[in-house]
Length: 434
Image: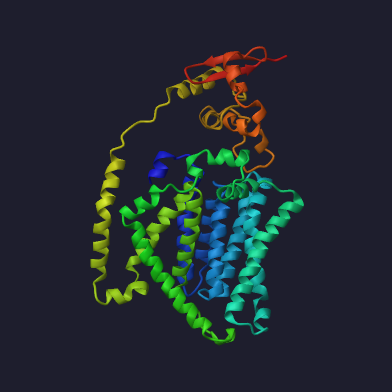
């Protein structure tokens, strides 16, 4: 709630509620003994609305496909359910392309997700032929996992190299910079902001103070014990055809795997705690699960356990709430308001503006004037036009320390520009026509 309250314009703030709905529907589908068309249609719609506002949503759905595929490989869901979910994802991709305006860029951004789903479908198709070889269960798991990784990662890499696609290359470079000394303009532009750095050390401590992390660890260990017990029972049988029944409670295993994926994302990029913290809260609710803690509830009333956990959590939780409630203020940016008012009443409706992206967003949305900036840094053709003076000292060391062009224009805009507006923060220059 605080994230949306303090930073409402973030694209993921618009997308995340639909991801919550989407995961609820996936959980319902995994638990249901019979699939209903309404659930599948609702899943497709929520997927589309999750994808539309945020270009990086496809990476989150990629972790979901990977988790569901792992759940299927081990035997917690049947082939029919997985195939239906994959088909829904493919329909979602088609609808996404239909509704989105930047077809070229988003095609290659979503291509990795498409390959992951196609690889799953291919494995489902060839699995009956693999079973004829009479391989062991463990070998079958390894074969399917290796095939999926090859079809998703290797083919995506080869396709990008063959067609010279670099729209999502900065994502790989950003991850590379997390583990190695690699750096370029793109990685420096991202990592200079704290939200794209590693998770801060205080975050696990805050999770622990509210008892969220300890409760989640208890639930996670209980699920892992169940998985190990189930897998041991399966692997103890020599042939794959011996196991005729499906393992129970695949939704618990799915959420445990999804938690691992969100944890990795949150640790690597602090901004993606957006997915980790709420999912930890969802996992903490499983402390009430009779499937996991039925042995405890036979001795202690479930209500007593829930009350004790909530009472312990509320000690630090109430302090956190009070801290948020004590923040009282009002947004005020008088210089920008002056700029917007001047643009609205002193310029023509077709006057075109260029400048820093946050300012241009206000010009576009509040003054309804066209801008030359493009908001999608994911477009490889647009990235070379992006600049940041502090980083150019690293990119161009021969000219390091020299004043940037913008600073020179602030002091003297002639002969190519003339100053038409200026206040304590902003200065608007107009191009002088030849």
